[in-house]
Length: 76
Image (cartoon, rainbow, N blue to C red; front, side, top):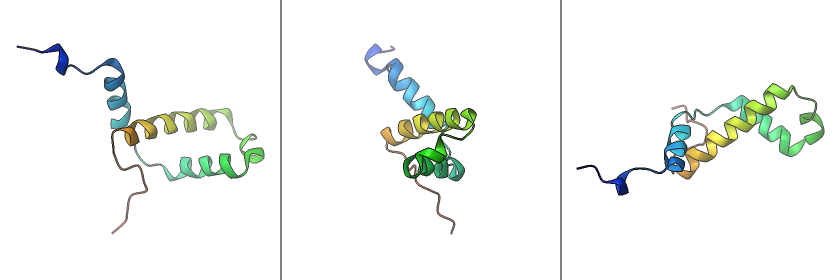
């Protein structure tokens, strides 16, 4: 029989769903670095890029929360 205690909460389900979509993106990592290091230049970027960065950071945080590797993939 199904046990409600085993059922994930909405937050857990959302976090897992977001984390499943994470893919490391070096371009957005560079935009984030620009945001930290040169905010005046970041402010001149297209708003679409800023929204894309915000979404990327949300998805990356969800992946990190679940213990997934969010660093750059190693090319061997």
